[in-house]
Length: 152
Image (cartoon, rainbow, N blue to C red; front, side):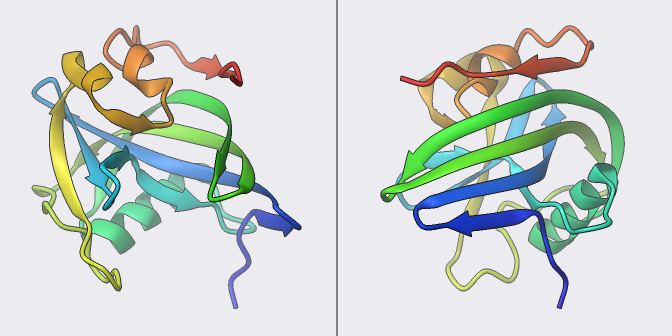
């Protein structure tokens, strides 16, 4: 069994994640859940796995396509509460280029989860996780940014 970087103690979860920022024509491809929340494609890094390799693996598992890594854009220290569970994730968000056109549906999930292209300059109109991407991605300068969101 492959071990990933996720640990749970009581109602606290700590994880290390890698995600793909699939941007094309001033739009980003995000997956949408049944509560109208939008997420980047990605997941937990496996023990011994490089973050770049984790991004490629997650995109392959979730969308069935290959991507090329362009650059690490954001490192986010994301803390949030969901369903009475407190999460603290260290997240590596990579700009990537798909080698083939991405599908608009995630593959292999028990429940169907769709993907949508959202305009970068309209991200603030949506419930995007992590929230900081709504402001930072449209004005990304090309320099790696370390984001520590303020907790409410």
